[in-house]
Image (tube, rainbow, N blue to C red; front, top):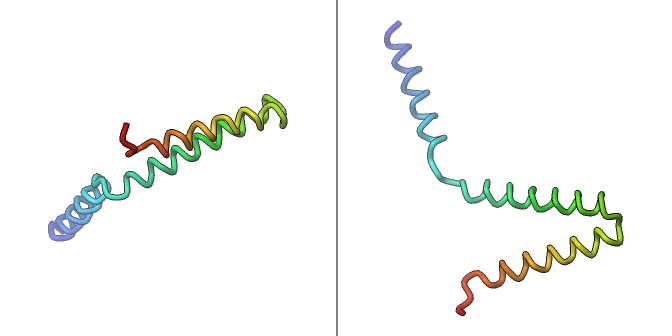
Length: 75
């Protein structure tokens, strides 16, 4: 019985250690950011109508692109 408990404990401890690791964390954060931006675009289009929402979404998109392009650029 104790041997079974030890094996179960070791298995759970290894699984917990794997979940605590930061490996792949950046991917999760980028996916969350993309979903957030997509939600904002959808809300803007839904509230502002297609014409006004499209202009606002285009402006937001161009600003995000400028910020991404400026990362790593020397100033």
